[in-house]
Amino acid sequence: MANQRRKFLKNSLLLTGAILIAPKVIGIKEKRSHANHNTGAAKLKLSFKPYTLELKHVFTVASNSRTTTPVMLTEIEFDGMVGYGEASMPPYLGESQETVSQFLAKVNLSKFSDPFGLDDILQYIDAIDSNNTAAKASVDIALHDLVGKLLGNPWYRIWGYDPLKTPNTSFTIGIDTPEVVKQKTIEALPYKILKVKLGKGNDKEMIESVRTITDKPLYVDINQGWKDRQYALDMSYWLKEKGVLFIEQPMPKESVDDNAWLTAHSPLPIIADEAIQRLADLVRMRGAYSGVNIKLMKCTGMREAHKMLEFARAFAMKVMIGCMTETSCAVSAAAHLSPVADFADLDGPLLIKNDVFEGIKIIDGKVTLFDRPGIGVVKINP
Ligand code: MG
Image (cartoon, rainbow, N blue to C red):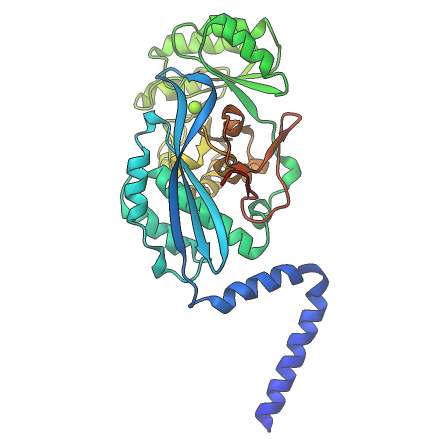
């Protein structure tokens, strides 16, 4: 009797609670209870397939040129819900469709029955092998997409970021002849900031070509192409006069002292890209750079990128959210961090002809997030 009474009271309280919160969160509650109900029965299932991105232009940086970029598209399925992910493998980073396939073949997600256990699952992924950061990111992104969908919310909201605070994205101009650079600068007119690749010996010619077309603010990315720190310092003064806002990875990542010296003397902020891949690098390199370009493919995905962003802010470092040549899948995943970044370089999908997803949009030069759950992408090309 007493038991029944306790049960009745408990149910009444639950019901009252449900009625009170119903108008606001009932949709989310239904989805969560749907997931919880199946915890223990449903399993996480990973699948993946290679895909080749076709670039609109030949893309040249200090170290190489290319017309395509290999990627791997991933899916994690759980209880009828699918999360999408992606690994992008620009050749100079050491991963390929073969290495990513080999890595993903070792992943056994069936031992996890709760997709909300991100920490355990992603620690398991990271421990499978060293490096392979893009392969790891392809699992991380798909898992975040799945979890966001199960929660019924986009990640910027789960993290508590204001989607209206996203920055303008830069649009990248690769190293080329003055005629091509001018043409690309004209094509880039919709974007409010340009990122100009330098480091191949024609630095001033590149900037002067851009400046014949536009006086927009510029970022420059040297991709480790400068070898002499005095040249780098002289260029930093010249570039400041030309309206450049910062210099990305001026010298080789191994030249820690030279880059740190430049950071101490340059009138422009010096942003690390190749030198800071993961959270441990950020902590180790504290003081050597003014800021960091955080990319999901370098740091194993959204979970570590989010931690890096918070560490960088605590270290008073500038943060750029960047990308590789990627589909709208990985770029949209990165964009959820952009409301708290100082700079964004999220032009990946703008550089390719055969996107697979619809995701974030660049509207009037600004990164624009939508109120769609997970990473907020819709597959448009199966
Ligand atoms: Mg870079």
